[in-house]
Image (cartoon, rainbow over all chains, first blue to last red; front, side):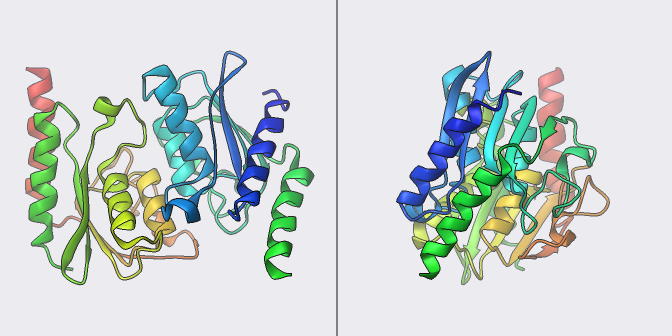
Amino acid sequence: MNAVFMDRAIALAKKAAELGEVPVGAVVVKNGKIIGEGYNLREKFSSPTAHAEIAAIEAAAKALGDWRLDGCSLYVTLEPCPMCAGAIINARIAEVVFGAYDKRAGSCSGDSVVDLFSCGYDHRPAVYGGIREEECLKILADFFKSLRD
Amino acid sequence: MNAVFMDRAIALAKKAAELGEVPVGAVVVKNGKIIGEGYNLREKFSSPTAHAEIAAIEAAAKALGDWRLDGCSLYVTLEPCPMCAGAIINARIAEVVFGAYDKRAGSCSGDSVVDLFSCGYDHRPAVYGGIREEECLKILADFFKSLRD
């Protein structure tokens, strides 16, 4: 875990906000290098799967030419939802680092809806939650405030 | 629920098998019409997200021009994994009909790994499991037997 990669995830989340998308950004890292990145584009693509993590995972798999992201870490500004946590399991990502907890849809922590990483699937990544939490929360809070104003 | 739509999901699973992919097929139905379909192409695309349900959901969202698949049903030959069950929740699909249960990765039944549809997410689809179960199981069993032979 190297929290510096959260810088890029945060920058990607801000890009999403500029486009009017719920601001979440993610990167996939292997051997100290970013090999895939993405941000939420659900509204732009009218797609329920266009989350930051899915984009970053698909880009990383393309870069490696392999659906197995063994030895990779995923950094994301918000706790993954069940779809993204499931994609992390399917891709066998070794490590997940997330910023803000998500009580409504978060699926990687016993304090959120469910912890999919301790349910008994074949693969179980290491998880670090609440990393750069305040910055990640502020991006979301600012975005939702701007929608209300 | 209309089990006839499982015919098309089964046909799509067989297409996957012909391509050497784990045979799973899926369709999304709205108002009695198939609006999206897909089959597993994980190996072809080297992508951990290229499951049948994701392809069918993305095609349906594209057809409707909306990430919200309200009032839609998803028919799939195998119990959805956590990624696909999460995509079903995110897309607000009303109803899920699946064929074979999946003890290893299934995420829509208390008898499998976890039932994501009764965990407390904002959306909870109706679920019918074990529909055309024998046919769906046989496609998978034949595929894995052919790999071993």
